[in-house]
Length: 568
Image 1: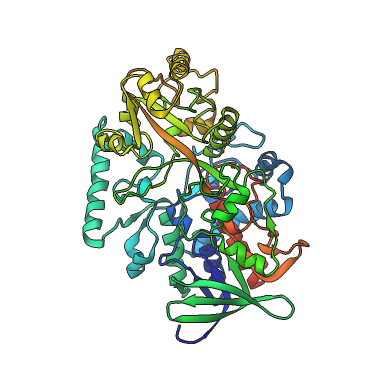
Image 2: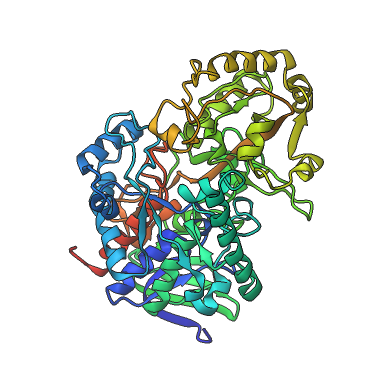
C-alpha cells in the first residue's frame, strides 16, 4: 500500500455479508478483488446479526424434503410487497438465490444449516410457509482465521452471555432449561468451559455462531482466494471516466491516499444508513430529530454508500412505506455509563410476557414479527400521545424462567439491573405501574382480562400463539399454547422498549443485475450495490427471518457474475 495507485478488477466497499459474498464470487471467477472497510474491524452489521438468510428453494431445504417452489415464494412476495413488488429483481432473487447457496457450499468455506421450523413471519398469507426458507451459517472455529481473527468484528455484546455466542433453536432451549434439566445443565456447562478456555488462550470466543460465523466463513474464503481486506480504509470518492463509467475510488488509508483502479466495477456494500442522523430525521417518522432512534448497527454505518452513489448520479428509492426493518430494543446501562442496545427477538413470544403502552393497555400480538410489533407500537403511541415507547411486563416466575431482555433467567443474578434502572420491579401491578408511568387501574384491568383467558391458553384480543411463526419462538413444553400464560403472581417486572432497526430498507435503486441506476432508471456503468446499500426488494415489509442477508449474499453473487461476464 506504499504506491499511490492500486490496480484491480473489482473494488468492494464494505465488508459485511453482501460485500464479502461479491468478493468471494468474483475472485472465484479469476478476477482480482480488493475489499476496503473504513472501520478497524471487518464484518459490518452482518457480524453482529443473527446470521439468518431467507432464500426460498435453498439446497438444505431440498435435501431435508421441504416442498416449496419459486412460484409459491413469488406469490408470497407479491402479497407482502403489494404495490412495491419489483418483478425483475424478485425473479432474479428467486432464481439465483438457490444457485448462490449451491455455489458457496461447493466452492467456499460457507456451509449452511436449515431452520426447518423457522416459519415465514406471515405463514398463513398466500404462498407462506411454516418453515424451510431460512438458513444460517454453520458454526465456525475462529482459530481457522489465524491472526485475522483479531480483525473480525465481535458479536453484539448485549446478545451474548459474557461474550459467549448462543445459537438459536435447541441450543437456546438448553440455556432456558439449565436449572431444570441435567442434560441441559451438562450441555451448557460444556459450552461454557470451552468458552472460558478460549477466553484464556485467545481473548475471545472461538466458537463462532450466527452472523459472526457467516462473516468468518466468507472472510476465510476471501483470504483463501487471495482477496485482501483493507481495514481503516475509507473511500473518499468514486472516480469515473468521461463517459460516466465508474472506474474505481480514492481511498484514505493509514499510509496515505490511494487511487484504486477497478476495471470491472465497484460494489457498494457499506451497510445502509442506520447511524446517519440526518437521513433518519428525513425518513424515520418516529424520530423527528433523528436522535430518537436507536440502532444496534456499528457506528460506521453512516450512509457512505448512498452518498458515494449520489455523487456520481445514482438515485435513492425512499418511497417504501417503511425505510428500515424495525425491532423493539431496550437500553441496558454499561459500566462506563453509556447505554447498550438489546434487540428483543425471543422474549416477545414467551408465555407470560405481555407488552403495554403507558395507557396500561396491550396493543399487539407480542409474538408477531418485531417489524410488525414496532408498527403497532408506533400507531398506538401516536393515538395516545406522548413518547413512542412500550413496556414488557412479566411476573416473577416467568421472568426467572425466561429472562426479560438483557436481564437473564435463573440462576443469573438480576438485582443489579433494578439498581441500574434497566429493570423495573413492583410488588404489585399498581406499584409497577407507578414506576413506569402507566395508568395503574388500566394495567390491572388489562392483566385481569388477559389472565382470564390465558389460563386456558387463549388470547381472544390479539391471538398470541396462533401462527407457526408465533409458536416457533414460544416454549414448546408449555401447554396448551407455547406463547400464552397468565401474568399471575408478584413481584412484577418491566423493561422499557423503544424502536430500533435491523438495517435500512431505503437505498440505491438497482436492477436485477445489482447495477446501480440513475435518476432516469438507467444503469451507471461500473457501479453495483449489495446488502443494505441497495433498496430492499421486500417493499418495506419483513416477510421472514433473514430477508436482509438472503438478498445480500444473492445479489453479491449476481454482481460478481455480471462483472465477470458469466452466463451461469
